[in-house]
Image (cartoon, rainbow, N blue to C red; front, side, top):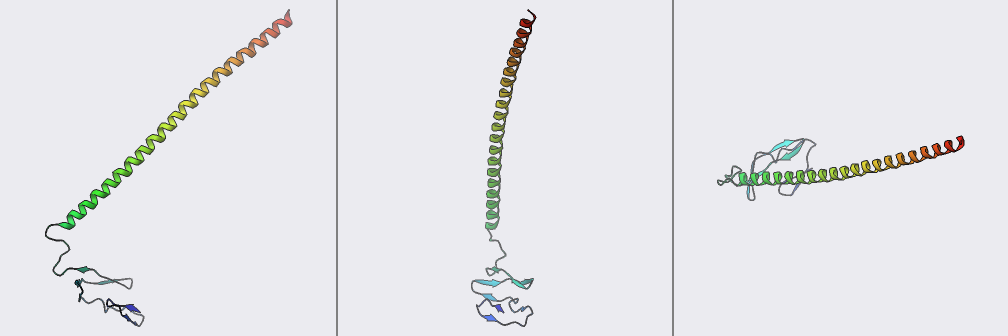
Length: 130
């Protein structure tokens, strides 16, 4: 069953019905050359005598405006990503510096404890000899 452009349903014999393929005047414009794709009717409407663009190039302006918006969004995404990565790098660098400082402090404390242990062992062995 196919639904015609006038809203009425039409029975089909199981084959694609090309009854909508003919160019005919409808409402505000005319039906441009229709084609079928995978059994679906495709076509577009255009104003009578219109080639798709007005004499002032409004479609070109609209297209450029869209391109500008896309570029603007791309720049915004790039700035957000760059800002995010910069912040992550700063956090990682801060964590690395903190880790290095902590390691240095622990190394110094361990060296001091080793020295104290060595001194205790030395004193104990000196006491035994006397």
